[in-house]
Image (cartoon, one colour):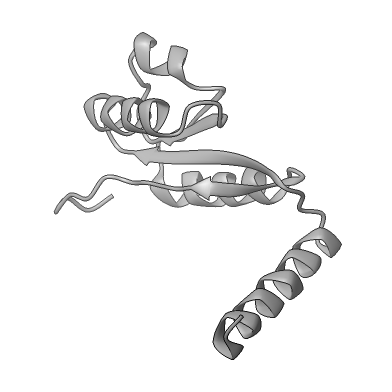
Length: 111
């Protein structure tokens, strides 16, 4: 194995150990963020199709569509984007797993 790959392997092992010490395990969740029902549905559908078997948590500033919520293992709604951010941090760091993927929607609107 080339030296650079060995270094990367050691770094990954160190990070894995650090995460375990912080209470993180190998279980993964996918966290999606959205600001309106259509964006939430697009993100949830994309993750549901692209990462089957990984629990999906949706963090939104507005109530998602019923069919969107049905795709998710957890839905958190906060009207304020800053409050949503802090709630997501609290929930994602409070579980013995790590985030596998965190897509969000990009808009020009301020939130």
